[in-house]
Length: 165
Image (cartoon, rainbow, N blue to C red):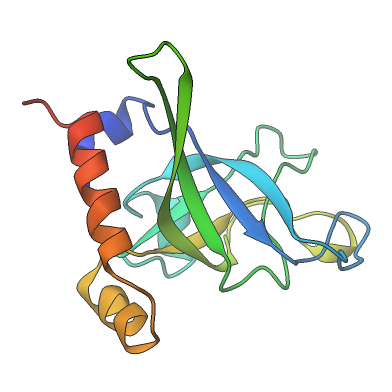
């Protein structure tokens, strides 16, 4: 996903939707796919929390909804790695109806170091995610049979939705 730095920093990209089969709060694995909206912490891995996790600037990003050092937040966990992370963009179309577009922006990678993790799962503090727009990731997707025209359509949509004319 290509968006101006100012949009990301201004909170226009508040949360992302992560999907997976990872552990739940009680430590059990779910039978069905589960989802969570997780707050965008650092879109470019430029702060100190990302450094502690070996987060690669401009190749990865971090998500965390943690607001308290004592309460877990929505998060990915063991078993979610490799799962998709989407940006959900909603707008009102010409007919006055709400339209929502799901744009793949990342792949779940690992837990975020340097923040509290909770319970039997050691999750809830945030994670590090691979940004899918990087050339080596796009190459891997192409080699593994993912149709890249979907990515091109998403890129054009984001450019129309976010970038000034």
